[in-house]
Length: 326
Ligand code: NDP
Image (cartoon, rainbow, N blue to C red):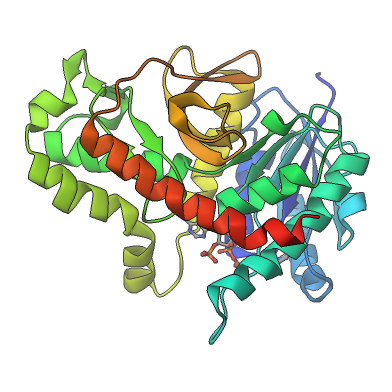
């Protein structure tokens, strides 16, 4: 039996947490032969609810679940963790302005970044799900100077998966056969899902669809506003699909993609003209626990415009928290 991997999940009592924890404990994220210890962080007032979730986890009798910790202290939750899923974040409440939301989250992610810096495994892989995910990941990264900045990532995988399913529906082909999709930028309606290089069984998706208006007026708005459409229909925000994307993101990062492209929000290394350190959605491949940006893609005029648009939003968010980062 392998040694257990310590996995931290914040916002463990929330609805994404409820869709996430059981799948991690059943081995869907790190492999069916990989025991895990769950280290659950939530606010003091949510501790009772976390206990209830832990009781249910116990009642599943998962063979791979080697232990659990519940706490409201980030330094306990992050102690020696090799994977950290930062899900809990401050939601926008009525009358709250964008800058207040950014500031409230900057506070949370500064504290959590510092705690990771202090107590986490030195190779911890961090995924930020809580919104604004890219900027929260940037803040955590900047607050953890002793950890490798490349180990801080933001979740763009839900946008990627949403785009895959829209393309499958449009072409009448199977999701599993779609390759080489890219999503650029921020996890927000400004993201740019780009199927110019995508193929289905080797055939070009762009040629198959051959409809620029559909791309601009239907596909991109549908993917971009999918979260809002789900709230409208369900009366609650998406949770199971967000948890699923988080699992896909970490599984692929840890176990590899066999050359397949996936999308991750990662600190820019300057590729494609994105300023260094901006937490940006890029197409990547993963191998041996490392991701690598897919290089050499041509960026046409429409794509450059969309990329600049989502970049401008990220730069604005980054400027909005700069004074809080010291
Ligand atoms: P959810 O579990 O539904 O969502 C958690 C976060 O994920 C939110 O910021 C949400 O953003 C974000 N998110 C990112 N992508 C998506 C997506 N596609 N669909 C839906 N959400 C997405 O929130 P709950 O309110 O149910 O639970 C939050 C938990 O976090 C609570 O238990 C709370 O106590 C805890 N919390 C913990 C903190 C801490 O440990 N320090 C700090 C703050 C909260 P959005 O709001 O934009 O939907």
